[in-house]
Image 1: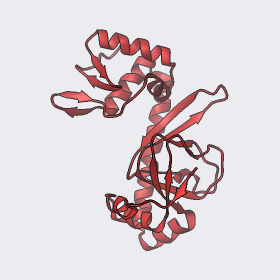
Image 2: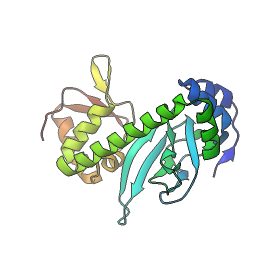
Image 3: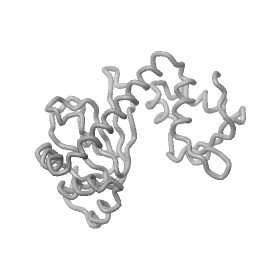
Image 4: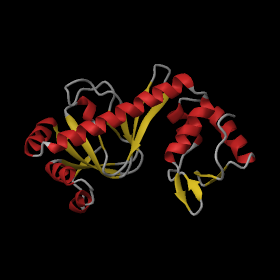
Length: 218
């Protein structure tokens, strides 16, 4: 359950990079969420935008067989819920991965903000286009790549260079990787074991390091 208000909200808003987003967040209602709280439910109708100020959230959908597919993970400076601002139903669910603070902005407040800052409409549109492009790429990967190919692409997209090696900064369980590539946990466990034995990756406390370039096929 969400609880309104949180100490340090002004500092969290001030840390946002975009001036227009900072001003919009200041217009919203600050809410805190505990870990594992479903903030948005797929299929529900709503007219609010959630700007993440602290914490992380997962955007996902669940099929009839209860299998879950993860579309994205968002942290501070990102926002969710924009796809329902046209009055349609929510296209995905959003759950908190850790205690999270958001600024909740209504559609009316967003319209007023865009009237004062028309350039923010382009910022919002660019964000929607980037997410639509990622969704298209994910659908293509599910159709054209095998499980290993999808895992390889996920690791390559997440990895950052540090101290002469590529590291994945997120702590990922086998189930979380499976959800993000549309596979089973058992298949991911076998792949990671093989990649570890081959010297391609190492795993310590759920943090994955890419020790050398992953092979194109497995």
